[in-house]
Image 1 (cartoon, rainbow, N blue to C red):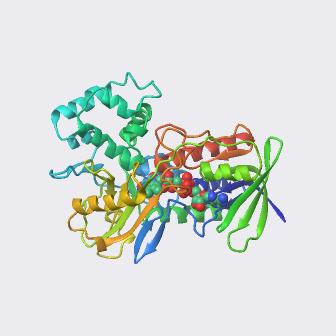
Image 2 (cartoon, helix red, strand yellow):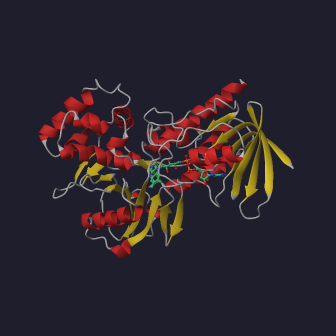
Image 3 (cartoon, helix red, strand yellow):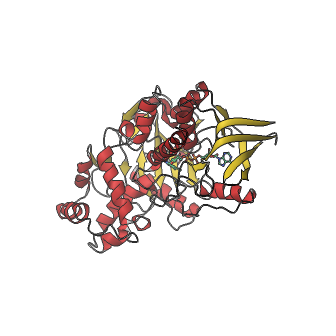
Length: 428
Ligand SMILES: Cc1cc2nc3c(=O)[nH]c(=O)nc-3n(C[C@H](O)[C@H](O)[C@H](O)COP(=O)(O)OP(=O)(O)OC[C@H]3O[C@@H](n4cnc5c(N)ncnc54)[C@H](O)[C@@H]3O)c2cc1C
């Protein structure tokens, strides 16, 4: 039997759930299908011996309550969530030096070891932007034209490596400045009390209370078109194989570019999204009896080849680890090395940085590549939000952030807001 809704959403990651919440708040009837047995995609956790191990995101909301995601959750949807700022903006672990922490954006300059380097970064890089309109210029090329100081390269690589899983040679100068401006304007990161999973549980509850139908274990298989519109979606239950048809006025996909293209191919329609390179990486989860970072912060490791940063979210939200214990999460970028070698090297780097950690403290390692990259599209290379081909098809999530400098889940929230407004304005 065919079911009818105002809006169909494929994929129950953060992008899909935010969209379901915002549209159902405005009275739309929404049906959301998620193929996995849990909601939240790469923004959730699984419990392991009392530790909340991320499915992706390391429990950080890039701009805490001040960013677009924080505002959407706390103000627009008024969810009963608390997001707490980290104590320090970042803390820098250079080899053979004491860690350097700072609380505000401008403190970044203290993190660069020498005065001469600080002056260069401020004067010749941040104030002089004469070359950023050249769209093909990478930030690495821009730096190379001005300096050959390896510490300056390492400094920026640590920032973009942790926040975006990209090396500065993979980012245009323009995107890098957009990202730095956003860091300056919107400030430091925050941790939602209860972690990412608490955010997802709240969005699921909110949507269901507003009469959305959310189904797990339900995979989007195919779509059927009628002229320039999508007419029907075919879903299949991943355990029973039972099929279901949904018709709707609007269709929104939160699946990532590769998944969307394979569904379009299966549906035998001619339209495809441009395929774009994705950002890949990995992360370790370690347990520790005492806090390794002491104060909540984003720890940056500029001298490491692989591990770009780490956080200890249990310092803000103790329920993410068993009582008297801490959860320490790292993030690394693989570059061109194979995953196995990169993982081994990254582990060695962490154990060298924190001698009180031992191999038996490792809870797990995640790798994010192939169908599960860190970001479905490198920062700054997003696809269009709305399909030019089908008038009632839109896209949300990674890959559709809108190139405004909002990054990670902030970018997901920005793209979601755009699509939601587009759909709501259509009717009025
Ligand atoms: C290691 C790592 C660390 C990160 N750290 C942070 C961080 O600290 N802070 C931050 O802001 N961001 C972080 N991110 C990025 C953040 O996790 C993502 O930007 C965000 O979760 C993406 O959400 P999404 O909805 O676009 O995609 P996803 O979470 O991938 O959601 C897509 C959903 O669609 C479902 N799906 C796919 N195909 C189908 C189908 N055919 N039918 C039905 N459902 C389908 C998938 O199962 C999935 O649940 C990190 C990511 C990784 C991997």
